Image (tube, rainbow, N blue to C red; front, side, top):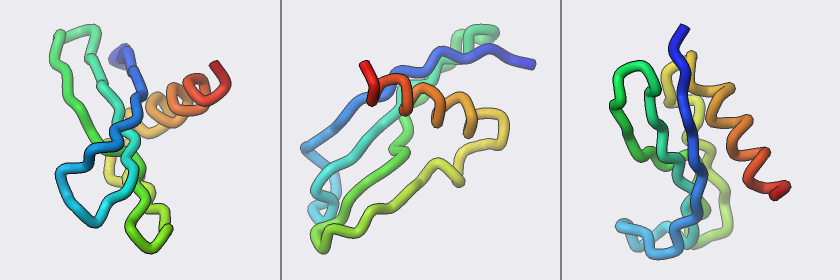
Length: 74
């Protein structure tokens, strides 16, 4: 099993104009040193929320969800 460090952050300046707000995760694989930034949630201009975390690899879903919850309560 691989260990990951996940940092969750908001991004208000979307690259796509129909997204009003985005939440991103910076995921660092502690074993390999590889990192990636992924959008895990976004709200469109009609107020609908889109959850992108199901598109993550299975081993990352719980890690990202837990980091998101922890960042919300900090």
